[in-house]
Image 1 (cartoon, rainbow, N blue to C red):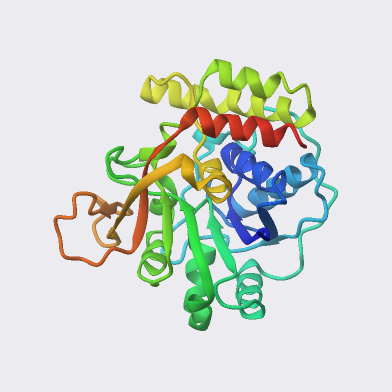
Image 2: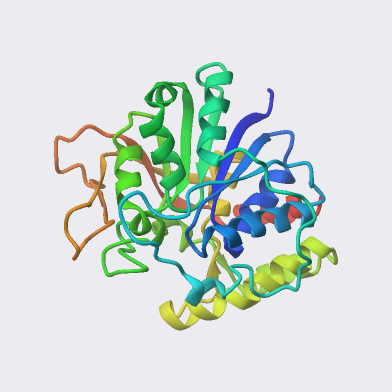
Length: 313
């Protein structure tokens, strides 16, 4: 079976970095056509820089990185330096990237790539706000039917919100873009907080990264050392959730995850619940299911996959 062609749309972020590393370490299963940066955890200049830093850390400087939208479609940008630090990759000391960002805008790269490939052969993997994807769909609606699948990290139901009482960060930053994506008709797999909060980097799991004794293993451990302080204090958990690598792990070993095919709507009107993913988990409405909403993960299997793949870099 040939590797699955994907575009990673991202706002790195330590957990985004691990998701990218996992993808680049898995060429048998995943063919990364390009990485598109979007403003989110930190502003665009930093997410673009961080994506290139991660590619060089992985020893994959030929990976194409594109800069996308620097603000949401209809709102002011909200960032998350309080979680990820001022650079977005606080923790390890990593050199500035040598590789250049591509000249083409990320939205145009997404459009051109989907038009150039046969329908049903390219998967979009958003790890941050959905601005680039929503903008591409609005600009070129002909590409929507060509997308094989969207596997994204975002939203929450049982775990409610992590940036407001009702909303998860990625969806909250650009709910208008999320609304476009969820109404697009493209098959969607959602990795919400409900599952990512079960993928906790406990001390033994972080020690396993560090004990790889490699530049990548050490960097991942130091990233987690930094951002786990926020989650431990907020949730009283045993470690930090690795949100975004759930997307990449699903592409490699989908059997690690389970969920329900349900209807998910995005709140775009109420400031009280703006960005809420209204997930009909109990199927109490007659709204048509539009997403596979993941609810559980084999956490031990997930971390075994991560350690094994990161050891390759």
